[in-house]
Image (cartoon, rainbow, N blue to C red; front, side, top):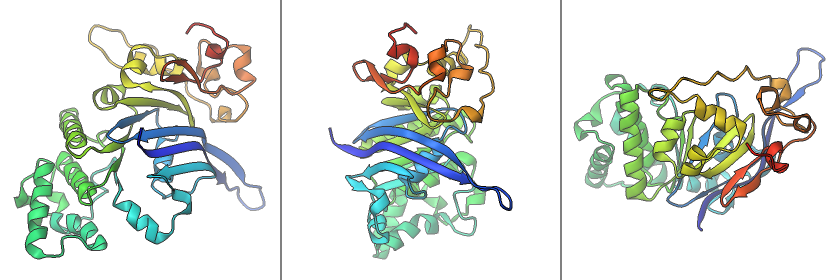
Length: 322
């Protein structure tokens, strides 16, 4: 299997500075994260706000440096790349952010926004060829070429996100990092953007890392799903397997909270405690109704309970039924 992205034992720690003479405190954000993204595949990264999903994207994109571990993109270690090598890698990997309002420079027209990456990489320098390319690029995301000379404030949120997607596709990347690209949109517009991403994935053979906190969205788009809790991957499997046979109590709680017609919502999880985000014990134990004494004594590791279905739970290590 050809892997576009491979993340091995990734750790990311920030130092929380204290005032005056206090010593800094290390805050772990990612702990021993391992993931892989094959070609022409959509990997959904699911978890509640603050669990480390966006930090993982920042490390993958080179915005943040890993504290430990390895991040390989097309076989290249992103922590060791020079500026020139990063420029080359930008043609392979692009990003679509959550906020379409903050992602576009209000002083630039759509033509200028889409042409900027072409100028940086020296593509389509001939005027007529560039014009034809920009028109086709907008049509590929469902917008008319008459919008090329308009400014971002003249568009709705869904249209702006389509422009963001078009800009990401301008360099014909092989990998797309989508950091909650529909969470700021209305539900009807979300469906349109998800359909667009699915179409683009099929026509361009894209590999997509799709970050979301919504299992309903992940169900529609993703081939595989990885569930993250407080910086750790607690479960990963093919999407249908995770949705129909969740093993980890956290995954089960998230799925139980998805609204369904004729179904009473499950009780909400208790508020998490950041003090439990430490190595040496299960971070989810304080909120888990199935926790035992062993859960507070050691950190669980991912084990393969079924073919391709990995889960990190002390109860599963003991062979207990979840």
